[in-house]
Amino acid sequence: SGPASIAAAADLRRAGHEVWMFEALHKTGGVLVYGIPEFRLPKKLVETEIEKLAAMGVHIETNYLVGRTRTIHELMEEDGFDAIFIGTGAGLPKFMGIPGENHVGVFSANEYLTRSNLMKAYDEGHARTPLYHARRVAVFGGGNVAMDAARTALRLGAEKVSIIYRRTREEMPARKEEVEHAHEEGVEFLMLSQPVEITADEHGRVNGVVVRDCVLGESDESGRRRPVEIEGSEHLIPYDCVIVAIGNASNPLIKMTTPEIEVNRRGNFIVDEETGQTSIKGVYAGGDIVLGAATVILAMGQGRKAAAAMNSYLEGLK
Image (cartoon, rainbow, N blue to C red; front, side):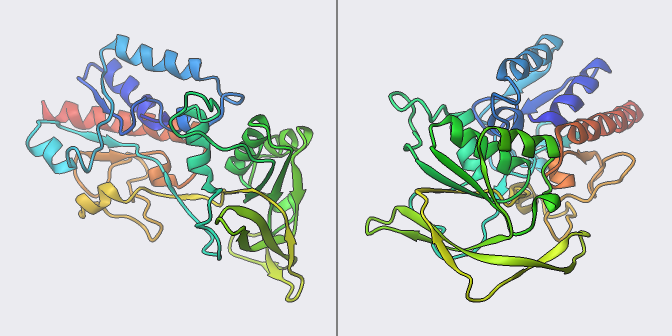
């Protein structure tokens, strides 16, 4: 029930179709609710959009995990759905594969932001999954999610927050305004720095990050200069919390239960560029499950494009 699905559901309902929206979590909104912090997107705005969908007659079911509660085939062949839009996003966090990522106090940005935004982990007295108070926080990555995580850590009371990134600020994939906001709020930027190990105390709790210096070499396939690590430049920086924000992969559950759906090597669904239809007739997809981690606007655009194609497809069934 993220941005792509909200856009698709609204357009399909306006076209006169009966629409059901299934959400795996207990609250609708997808990444708009669990991924984007309140200071960037007030949740009341999302709640208003969901309320509008319900008022239009869209049926909304939460705690419904497509692929586990019901498969795509069961929904179409047994439950009578004529067409399906999949907007499950890219919610499977990636890690670096360095020593120490299993220590206490290491989070994926996905978990950290979800616990803060959706589960109110900052409310120590009432939250079921509180985030312990961290004084020094390291964030690995240079994208928009890394900026969100860093700024959230500051708001949760961290005295020092560092973005550790292996290239320079110019190569950061985050939008310039997001980087500027983080800088203005006091986030430290450690550029040309590659984390190689996360250290811990005798209790297994994070107490530092070993960082290796880098220089920029030749350009890679992304057009950015490739970081080259300098052997022997390792040094330890004390931290008591690490947030890994190096990207997310597509959730594999629907692909596992619907093997006919074609995906690329990254696990993203392959769809027709004009219609959003997958390799299964009547099944469409859009948003991060197709694009990888992208913007809300792009996801909504894909949802609307798919909805138009689905409307034509459904009209043809009459």
